[in-house]
View 1 (spheres, rainbow, N blue to C red):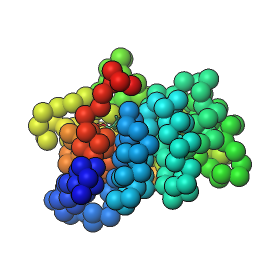
View 2: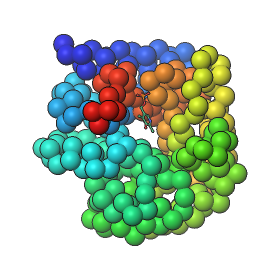
View 3: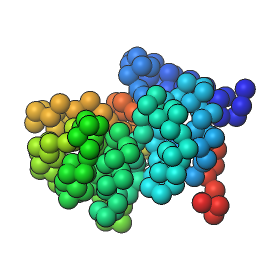
View 4: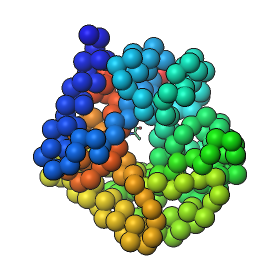
Length: 233
Ligand SMILES: *Cc1c(COP(=O)(O)O)cnc(C)c1O
């Protein structure tokens, strides 16, 4: 078995264990393979080992990769998870199935306006800043409800849930704190009447904490593909 295949198995097992500890079915946690900085061949290898959900952060790199994966495009779903520049929304609206990193209304309005009708609505998660630091991207928690209300009215988007990238923490207890905050916000939005089903949280080093706090999709890069080489990128 290739490294990618065996590492995928290891991650699937970690998810199953964490789900079991949380008294949740393993099938309630989807696995996104974050393939940023890795080549199309790595994506193909993961696909051949049953992986169908992929995440990318860098637009130009992602578009090139998608161009070389057209044969598996309809069998896979592609999630944009990186910072969205407002002048780069069109290719995201045209080529992706999901965007997890919407952190302001203007971006959502552009994505809705530019989404091709034939593709159906683009799935959206609002990225929330759970650490409360001004340097981190994501919408402040106290702005999420009003932005969610506006996004829910845009015609070519479906608001699915929330996403966060918490500050790294060493213990599972400390890792659970921002994940719990995101889940509470998610529950508040559902109580507001939004039909949300997606809590996008958990990465290679904190997926167990995220699953314990209710993650419905974890975004895993390093644990599947290995350490990223940003210099080469
Ligand atoms: C890179 C990235 C990930 C994957 O992180 P790993 O620690 O490599 O698993 C997850 N989410 C986002 C938004 C990312 O940019």
